[in-house]
Length: 144
Image (cartoon, rainbow, N blue to C red):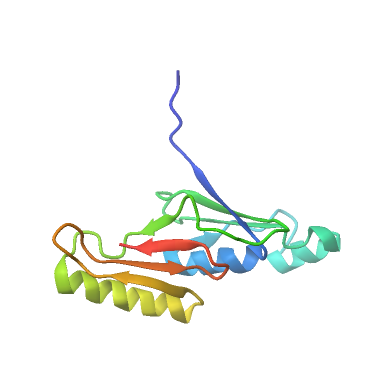
């Protein structure tokens, strides 16, 4: 049996375009190309019936290394903690004060983009520092 090598991570959200643009900034991703026949995403959205506008958005890693992120509009809001979350590897390989400084700096950048801080966990005898935040619609993610 052939193994699958690619995945897409899907987010349920109220405003797919807004959430997609946030994650593009976080990860250095880009929005997927505009559909053929349209100069911009705005032109594409305006060609759709009003109820279908901003129903979805997607972004990709321009290097091709990371998974595609897909954002789909759903009517209900988020009510409980995520069962799945992204770990944004901002401090990978760093330890102690150097790691904490990188996490705090990246956290400040993301908060300026609309993220909400949840919990900054300082290193202890077993674990390195980790920073939990929420994206622009309240989905938890970690800077680690």
